[in-house]
Image (tube, rainbow, N blue to C red; front, side, top):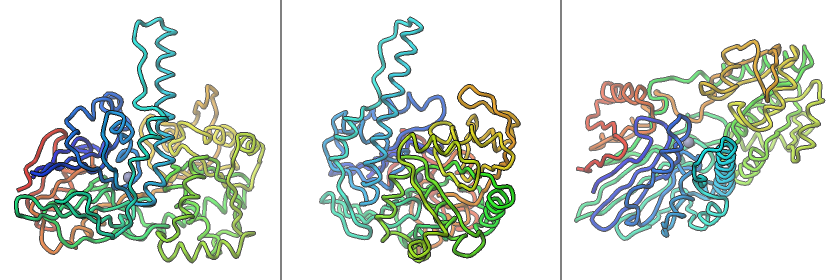
Length: 468
Ligand SMILES: [Zn+2]
């Protein structure tokens, strides 16, 4: 048996691995490459290998860098099942269609630009269409956490809660090949313990071969309590003392729901008197509804909190904006609102309008609670730009900008090591994936030094590794 990584090897996107054995092959994750100049080219060529032998696909979670090429895989001829947890399948119905919509728009836009420049280029087709994404959803097979699944005569596996986003899973898999059975564990993306909404990651005890993520393999997160007190200060100062609005750019999947529950918790604890919160992002609204529907996956604290929210609706007023008119109406609001909107890095979507109307007012504030990549509007705000350009208009920044660090959907170095410490014996081989070169190299050194493990691999994309 062997394993080939097709992405997320020395980088954090494009997660996809294929395990081949004497009786077949299977794929774990089928992710898109995101960000960077090469992403488009890499996405178009990512499936240029013989995937015809693949019997089934397993998905760890719904993020597009783990699932975004599923519509393309199916469009190119894959006919087998794609297994995912119930909540992941629900999220994908929203996310893959949204992704396809963006692909179509981008192709349309680039063709229009080529034509207007009279370039003699053939029109580019989108990576996949909405129709193709819809078709690919039919390949999804729903799996429950902790149940035994036998997708092939040689394979049995279980999806364990990874605590990263709703429906996220660690996959524990037993593969019988030529008389021996080996345990493979794929961490997927691992959540940080003790974070809002989700349960803590499951701790596997045994693996012959381990694939572990390393996004923050070289970093430690700030304490959640510190983050909460910073939030309390920002909310009370802006809404109470200054009478302005608080704008929170947030990723629609995961972060919006976390922020909502933290805000509710702060009101419940009496740290903030009362809040009026508006969620203005169709995607965030859809994902929040899904999160509410999957209450069984929440941690204890969140269930209690949801119960309290039902009994105290006047203290924590929550509204989801449906149409564009209602969104535009928010532009006239002078104060008293917390507006959560996407995109998380302020580059697209309705958040741009909210920033346009509130950034110039010193009584307002913006709370940045997520990672902001270089080159984005969000990053310029974090870097304290005095003037920014939004939709062609130059706006002087007078609002207060708070950068709040403690919220991350990924385990930090300490949490990753704690998770690995639960293995009773070191795996024969440990593949360190889903981390930039620097993070995973540093992480490998720490694993060696702190856990004393050997057999550490830093795989290269496209290279096949024998599982010995
Ligand atoms: Zn993820």
